Length: 178
Image (cartoon, rainbow, N blue to C red; front, side, top):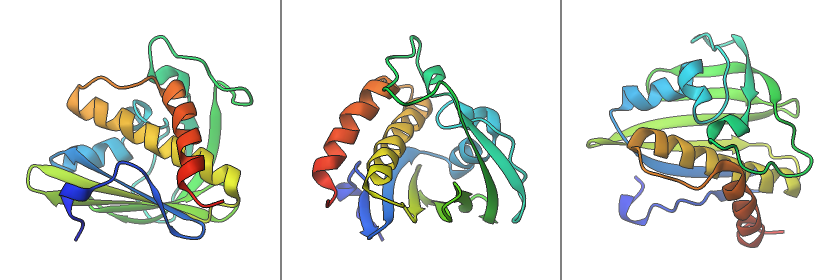
């Protein structure tokens, strides 16, 4: 069991190509689950796209990170306004666990939710990161997207997505092994 008092906001490599990041969010668990599986709610913190709640079903996620802030902030060079990714639901156990494919390299992302009193511990485990550049981009991305989710759930202010992502990418470059 994770000690809530020592919960680190930063992700960590739990295996050579696996990033794990945890956040303690305001509950109840059904509310946090809805932000994972409902395309309109997910669009507000991560990516849009309908998702059938059935293992084996296909979906498409659509990122428009500039829409997470008003004004949108400065997008880093090399990033488009929109990114699309096809995926498949690998495992689903509402409202506790969702596992999806990620990209074309055979990666996956697991979302595990555990009630902790009036809060929910969300653990995101991203497996099969293909190289260091991907690892840094994904680490900063998950960290910022989870900051956005926490802000949506609490109403508390946060840093704009792209400025936070750029700062965090540099921080992860110093935190994760080369």
